[in-house]
Image (cartoon, rainbow, N blue to C red; front, side, top):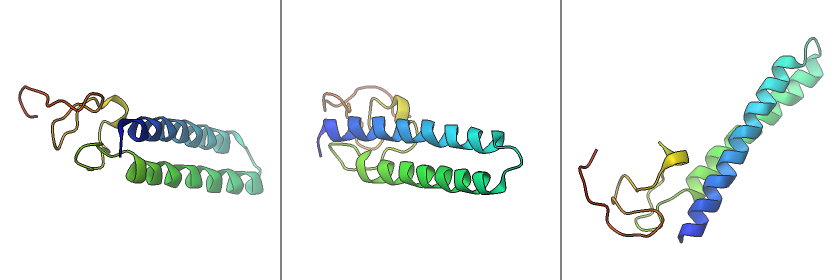
Length: 96
């Protein structure tokens, strides 16, 4: 797995997260229309599950293969192998 897979997975997960939030807001604004609300609930759940599938399948460290779930949007360093996600070099400093 290379860096481009991680970056494209992160972008896809961001897009799916935004779309699921929009679907949730649209469902809340649907008013007294149960069929529309039901359809929007299903769409939101589908998008949310798809986001987690993309994270599990594509948002992995290119070096050690561990899934990067927490802090995915701002991750620059793998929390497991302490390598930079962009260059692959070991990062010096305290381990958090």
